Length: 71
Image (tube, rainbow, N blue to C red; front, side, top):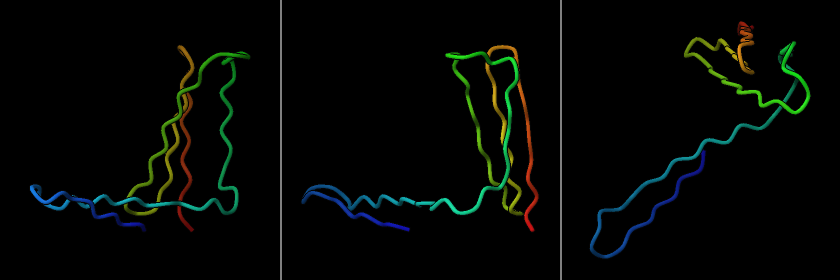
């Protein structure tokens, strides 16, 4: 985790937190069939408190959802 502290003489200090994830092993794959070449694909990745990885991908009317349980 990285922290930055920036402020001017007139302002309160502002703390900016940044969390960096380093890629490791492949956890899963998700295919969006019917997306077509050149079409935009929106991907939402959510990691729950209990370590479950949820992935949702959407391209037009095609929606695909997947989930990976923690070990």
